Amino acid sequence: MKKQWWHNKIAYQIYPKSFCDSNGDGIGDLQGIISKLDYLKDLGIDLIWLSPIYKSPLADQGYDIADYYSIDPRFGTMEDMDQLIAEAGKRGMGIIMDLVVNHCSDEHAWFRKACEDPSGPYGDYFYIREAVDGKLPCNWRSYFGGPVWEKLPGHENLYYLHVFHKKQPDLNWENPRLREEIYQMVNWWLDKGLAGFRLDAIINIKKALPFRDYPADREDGLCSIHNMLHEAKGVGDFLGEMRDRTFLPHHAFSVGEVFNEKEEELPDFIGENGYFSSMFDFAETVFGHSEQGWYRSVDITPDDYKRCVFHAQRRVGDFGFLSNIIENHDEPRGVSRYIPEGEVSPASKKMLATMYFLLRGLPWIYQGQEIGMENRKLQSIDEVDDISSHDEYKVALHAGLSGEEALHLVEKYGRDNARTPFQWNGGPGAGFTNGTPWLTVNPNYTQINLEAQKEDPDSVFGYYRRLIMLRKDPRYSETLTFGAFEPWLAQQHNLMAYLRKGEDQTILIMGNFQPQPQTVPLPGPVGKVLLTNTEAVHADGPFITLDGYQAVVIELKKSE
Ligand code: GLC
Ligand code: CA
Image 1 (tube, rainbow, N blue to C red):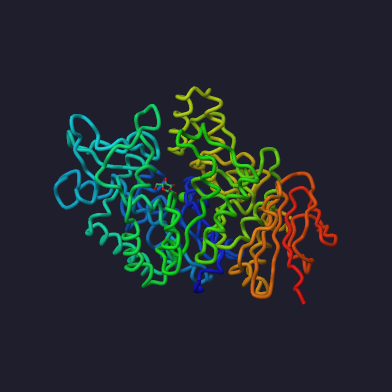
Image 2: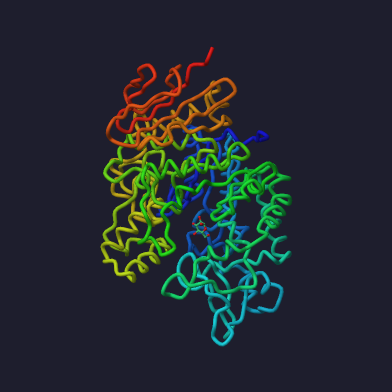
C-alpha cells in the first residue's frame, strides 16, 4: 500500500446544526464551528468532515440539497465557509464536505425544470416514468418508508424515483450531462482548498434497470432496495470516472458511505487506485439489522462486536485503509449501543474508545463522542425530529407493539440520539446556544459536558486526548498507523484483544468487555505499558488480570 498524506491523521465529524450556535437562533452554524477550531486543534484533530451545509429545505437535515453552490443562510454565508477553510488551514487542519449526489432536493432548479418539461433536458436528470394501468414502475420501498415513486408535480400519470424521502429525487447518473455537472461542482469546491469529500449513500447511484419488481417482503407489498443493489452492476464505472475527473487531480481525500458493496469488489473500492481513499466500516453498524424494521432488530453483544470488527479488519488486510467509527449522525451513540445496558460508565466508555481507535485504519470521532455523550430518553414521539424514526415508530405500531415499546425502539436506534446539541457546559442550553435549541439538549448535560472534563486527565475527554497523543507519538505512530492487525485470543468470551505489528515492534491492545475481572495469557513479555483506563496493570509472567472494563495498551518486549 502506497503511503498517502492522510493515512496518519485523526478525523472528526461535525453535525453543524448541533455543534455550536453563534447567533442565538438555536441552530448551529459556521461561525460557531470557527469559534471551536482551537478546541479541535487542541484535541489533536487533523481532518474535519461537515455534514451538509448547502442551501436546503432541510427535509432530511441538509441531505436534500437545493443548490450545491450556496450555503444555507441558517448556517451562514459563502464568506463564512471560505473563512472556515482558511482558518482550519492556518491551524494545519483540512475541511471535508459531504457530497450528496445520489439525489438532490425537489426544490433544486434542475427538478423544477424537470417538472416544467419532463421530456426536456432536465427531465433526463431524474428518473421519471409513467404508471401503466395505475401500476407504479416497480415495488421498491424507500429507505424512509413507502414506495420510491411519487407523482411528478403538475403531471397526472408521471412519477419520479426517490430511494430516500420524496423531497429527495434521485439523480440519473446514466446521463453524461448530469455527471459533468457534478464533476464540475466537485472541482469548484476542491479548488477552494477543501481536503476532500465524504460520499453520501454513494452505492445507490447505480440502479438495476429497467425497473422491475422483486418479491415483496412486508405486508405493504413492497421490497427492500437491497434486492436492486444486489443486482445492479457497473457502479464502478461512475465512481472511477468521478475519481479521475475530480479527487485524483486534486490529491483529495475521499471516504465512501458504502453499504451493500459486493465482497469481491472491495479492492476496487479502496485498494491501490481504488475509487475512494477510504470507506467506513459498517460491519458493526448493520449487525442485527432486519428488513422488517427496527422492531425486529437484534442487539449486538460484545462478542458479536468483536467478530464484526475482526472480520472487517481481516477483509481489508493491508491492501486498503478503512475508516473506523463507533457512531455518526445516523446512528445511536456508540457507548449506548456497544456497551451492555446498565454498564455504561466512564471506564467502559474509555475501554470501547481504545478498542476501535487503535485498529488499523483512520480513526473518526463524532462530535460529543469525546466527552462520552449518550442516547437520550424520550417521553413522546412528538419530541422526535428524525424522519426515519417516525417511519420506524409507525412500522412498530403497525406490527402490534405498544406505544411505549415503539418509543423505546426510537430511543435505542433513532438518529436524533446523535443529533442532540453538543454539551459544552452545564449552563443553560448546554453552552450550545443562548436561544432555544432546535432539538432538545440531552438532560444529562449537567453531568456530561466538556467544561466538567476539560482539565481532568482522568475524564473521558482526557482519555481521548491521550489516545490521540499515543497514535501520534513518533515512537508508536508507524506501528499504530501501518502495522498489521492480528487478533489475540479471538475465542475468549467478553475479551477483545489484538496486536498491531510493525517492522520491529508489537503493540498489544486489550479490553475486558465485562464488569468482572478476567485473567488471560499474554502473547509475550511486557515491555512497556503505553496506556490504561484504570489505576494499574496487573501483569504477572505470562498472564494478565484485567479489571472490569479495563483497557490496556502494551508494547511487548522485543525478542533478542
Ligand atoms: C446518508 C446520510 C443520511 C441521509 C441519507 C440520504 O445515509 O448519512 O443522513 O439521510 O444518506 O441522503
Ligand atoms: Ca445559529
